[in-house]
Length: 130
Image 1 (tube, rainbow, N blue to C red):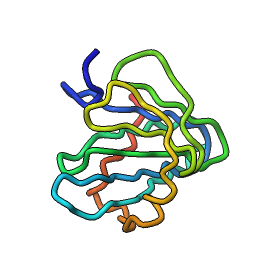
Image 2 (image 1 turned 180 degrees about the vertical axis):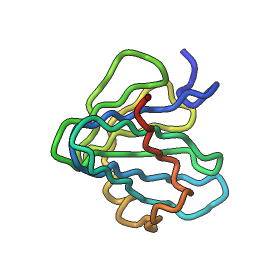
Image 3 (image 1 turned 90 degrees about the vertical axis):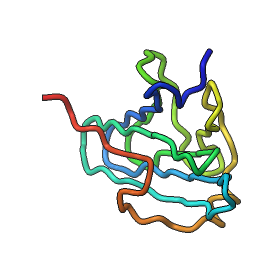
Image 4 (image 1 turned 135 degrees about the vertical axis):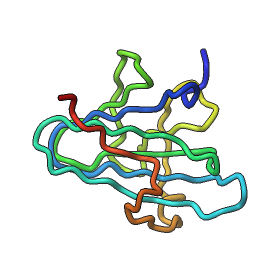
């Protein structure tokens, strides 16, 4: 099995209802700052987020804070798994991993700098198909 972040693959998070997807990018390859950010949706129905990766970070953790459920899917695969609901039980993945795991990322997130959504975060809302 190949790594998740290869050949255009990424992690898609699918949510239902209003909420925020929180993302932590950490373990920089150049000794840089760990970043935590979130992206919100006010959509009552389904929202799809794409988690990409940055060449400057080796590890990522994410969780859903919202009314409804949230699952993730790797690339164009059909299997979905639940997304963590807080930093203590965050979904986590490394740049060279072949699967997503669970991690207590509380201490890393608490010490990370806050990145306000500015186009620098590696998390995006995917528009619905027309």
